[in-house]
Length: 233
Image (cartoon, rainbow, N blue to C red):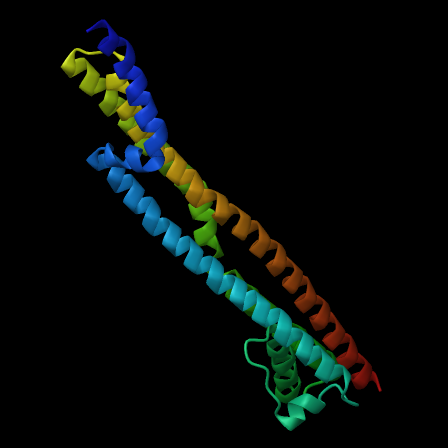
């Protein structure tokens, strides 16, 4: 009997260590499993957003490089617009198209008015492209902030259930406490597993979008300078 009392808690701890996260999930309560299920869905959404946005950013970079190469190869700045060439999913081309259409639509206006209209068209185009690039990024930011707290909520709830169960059973040995604590901690682990990749992806995407935004602003300034020179000429 004495040997059983000494080794049963140790056996329970070995079971928890061996089973790991699968054992913790098997002994978790309904509330804990609901939290894990929510975090699982959150993880799917987060990874979907990251794959989509990384593909969008890579496409914008690739098409932007191709467009600038073609633009620099033309003898006149508006030649691509006259030829009707297109680059799909290219923010720089969209700026170029908006600027050329702005110049085309300002026919008959004074030179200063043409410059103002062009500047307004380019600023709107930059804003539209930035909004398009930043769409859904807020989802990742929300996951980064909410997932650890959701996991913590599950942990606190699980610990509360574990101590409540011990109080009702009238047994306070580690063998009775360990399964409940393990089940409670799994939600924190899952919350961190969901939040960490989202945080890395969010930071990388924000940096890339900021760089693309600077490239668009520089291109808009270049477009405006070229238009002013042509008008002065």
